[in-house]
Amino acid sequence: MDMGVALVQAYLRAHGYLTVSEYPILEAMRNGDHRIATDIDILAVRFPHACQLVPREGRSSVGDVELQAPDQALGLDAAHVDMIIAEVKVGAAELNRAATDPAVLRSALMRFGCCERQETARVKDPAFSFLMMLEKAGAPADA
Image 1 (spheres, rainbow, N blue to C red):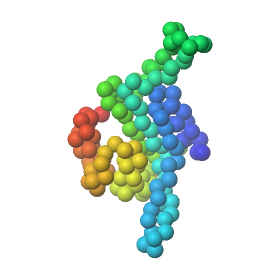
Image 2: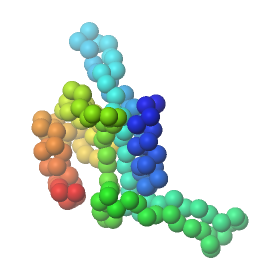
Image 3: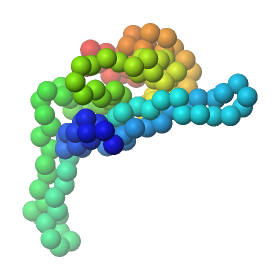
Image 4: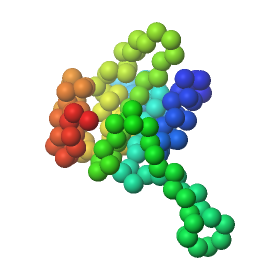
């Protein structure tokens, strides 16, 4: 795993996200075969009540400690699930072509299960379409 990806993954996990790194995106070839077209460096999801529970020894929950103060820079909304599809770069940032490919984004959205397949077909301009899907799902589009 790339050092930058490992650092981002550790940061997100420390702040309550479940993460998958280097998620492969398959592509169907014309001859019926499949190949890995690209990968997504980080897929992450954080649910509203996520925290790290440090249980006390024994069966009782009395004395359990919840570690749940996420970094304010994440701008989390306590009432909504947060999803991240990330391309991680070390040094000068330049998105590769696949990072903004609507087909790759559709595949990632379906992997999250956050919307129905017909909704992902609207992904033409990735940023605009994704914000529209968030609004329809009830999440604030400016988040």
